[in-house]
Image (cartoon, rainbow, N blue to C red):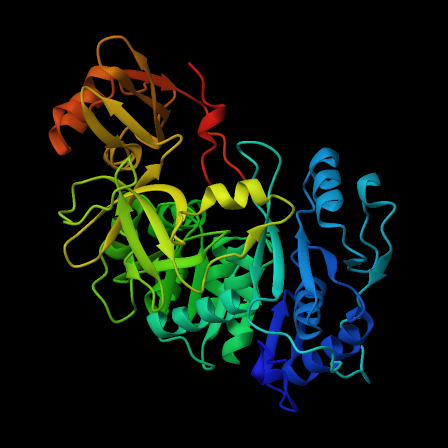
Length: 482
């Protein structure tokens, strides 16, 4: 069985591997801990991991992968119903947790094993040979259209995605990554923990994101930062009052944002203050990573770059026919094909079949435009962000970016609602900078029409105190109602 983490084999070095706050493990310590744990996991098909932002989560997942056992990361904030569904669906044989973790009743019947991150004396078992199609992780989707589905991610998807990102980002063992992402999603777990370990580099997890933590770690030798737009927005808001944060970002080798589109306004504020550009990439639970702006490529704010090595990407019309000429304006649904894809939704052959075309392309449900040179710009989800108004197909994302350039707008979301004349009318949901004096509809409409086109202007505006967001900072548009 080929290891996903070559640096663990025969590791004796005191090179740092993982650091969470004031707790850390070298590669030699990580190899010892995961080897000891892997020997206890080999008899299981799947194990669940109580995925708190702690050393124990990283050790548990690496040990499972070293043992050839699929890991099911659990969100500790999930409700009883959702946890019950995930555990019933995935049927793990064991639950791995940090010592002292308080667990809800939904996991009460599952055998629990507390993880000792300082264990020694074990070696990774020589189990049955595993190939690239064997499951590595079962990660559950957000469940916006029903109960969460378990996307089965094979070992080849993890390996090829991380190696493709190493190519795109010039990621090496010399890099030190800092982030504060949750560890039950692919962003924080696969990219943010497994990525550095596959390279033989190190990761410093903040536990909880803070701009002070980012500044401290980047000014103390970290070279890369991973975050979501909410985090970069807070960074952009803080830069003018925090010279240490400016220095930290200016000295970073790579700043990466993902999980949702980073507004162009925040891109521009960070670049103006630090001289550094944030790189965006595009992926999903089912596909891991599909595209990225390359470290050696042209950084274009508002785009997610070009397809990664090994990934095929196309845009298709509503009838499924491929768009053959890319002009940066024609909107289509993204379909992808490649070794980065999941193999199935666990126990859902119907959903698996519906997700793929007959010739193996995965239907992402994401809408985008593509430039002639291959750069992709996401305009939204097909289900919630594609607005058909007055005969035009309009992506909500570009209108949101335009609204965020208005000085009176702090946050913005755009949806469509039925209109007898237009088919759908554009609705803006605004968190104003000054709640006592929010920008009126006519002002916002003129602002958008002047930057984009008249048919993209909002026809309705709602002023809110906040926008509903999930754990990854994505706006939950289904919760927005007039």
